[in-house]
Image (cartoon, rainbow, N blue to C red; front, side):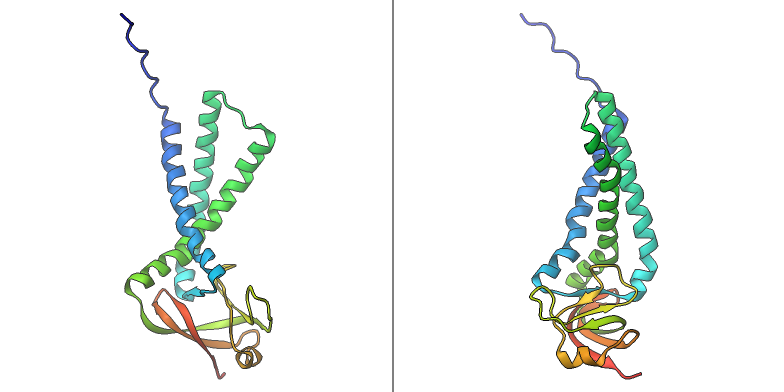
Length: 196
């Protein structure tokens, strides 16, 4: 007759909290990558300037803080279990992971939520943006790129504008963008320079 099986060690609090935070960060990764990934399919979505102004500080602070906390708890858990990942792994964990998830988390809040809301309750709409730069380019990745001001990097551009529209725009110009969206953002369908 075999003896009773050894009792399982209770899970430490840092490990359980770290697991929940890492699961949350995995969702942030999946949802935050959507606004960036759709650019590869030549679909342009722009969040509204007002939405970005309201949420960008919160998004950056919250997502960076959550990523740093998850990294610390994960490191504490590894030390408690006696695991090592080497110097290069430690550097990557301390420097890369918080910045990476800060970027994706910010993209999720500033562009992902407005995009999901547009898919749910969008309608034909129009928004006005201010141009940062407009240049002709015949690249297959982004032809005739227009970058707008006050929006985060990567989700601040529209590709595929007509040559005459690009020629009419300069830094500081105003452009009306029509598309399918809500007050938080829109999928770009048409561009029209606004006379000063």
